[in-house]
Length: 250
Image 1 (cartoon, one colour):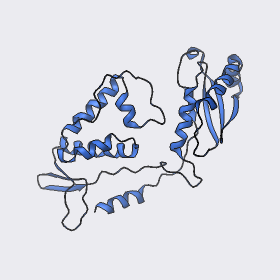
Image 2 (cartoon, helix red, strand yellow):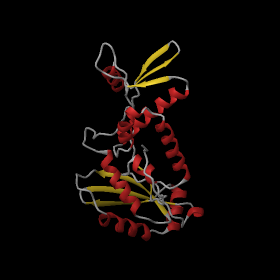
Image 3 (cartoon, one colour):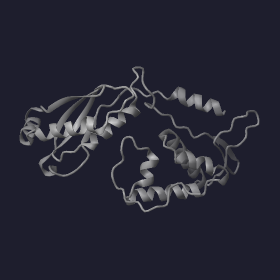
Image 4 (cartoon, rainbow, N blue to C red):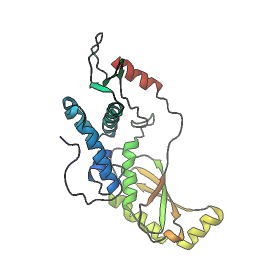
């Protein structure tokens, strides 16, 4: 059993925001990604056969949470194995029906291991904003192109469940950028920090774009249009999630 498909890879394009980790890694052409695939296959080959079917399915999942969790379990298993431990997967506990991920033993040392990944920002927040849905807008922005600019995107209003199509945004965005005077935009940015901005109403989305001229030495070179987009900050609280996960297996 192997994790990745066996075919000649020809697609070397960057990962799309809506593309899962596995989808990208499975199709990416460059040598660095082949080394990554080879390493994962090497780890997977020594994983106990009794657990390979389930682990392989999760590694191949389009849900990045499933994929990442499975990779972390595989990594932790391999880490203990190469460190000289004997590792048993999903051992039974005498006083509980739960099964932790591993029982690691070496000499007179024996302990249970639970490989847990805690995710932040993967569900809608209190205002109903879904960061996964926003990825569609990021990819749509990158479908547009202009060799003289990249853009900063701010989502003024998040739309509903209807996704904008390419014709709703790409031609208008490209037309606006091509109408700007590069020399003027570059001088403004470097003298006063001012930039050209434009708001697009796309179906029920409101998107604000800021045109940022590339440096003269990079002008005319192709690249992804989206240079920056709004992010979120704050404290990440994972203690409760970790305790909850550990208590389920204890």
